[in-house]
Image (tube, rainbow, N blue to C red):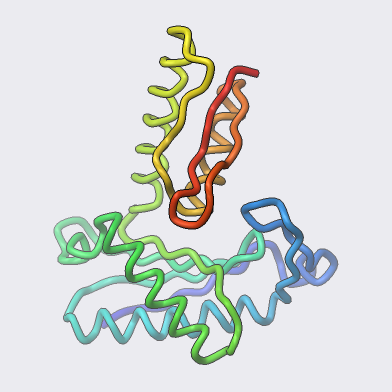
Length: 184
């Protein structure tokens, strides 16, 4: 059976005083905390039902931060949850979960799904991509382009690039939108 645990960050009181949060492209977006709580609950119910159907063990944690609901599914080592933790599988399940939330709320969801630490693993992969791009810059390239990726992953890349002391911009449209890194 799947356990659901709920955690809210920032506190509801803090969120009420600051309901406007930036989205990944820097635009302001208002998402009331109660709506994020509802999104998280709907998403957790959807994921819990999916895990039960597939007979996969996992504990679900719900968190809200930065104007998004975050759903994390974890289990002990050696369980069958790893079957769902591949990046493409997590991305597909995240989209299905967003659609389930949208179907019940009538609004677009920006929730983030993490299965068995898949987000941390992807962030490490993105850091490696950034380090390789920076190496190309240090070898004399004027700029270094990364592959197309989601807005959430581009946001992570922008943060990593900034930490490394370089500049990054997103270019392209739709599925071709990618990050380009240049020296500071």
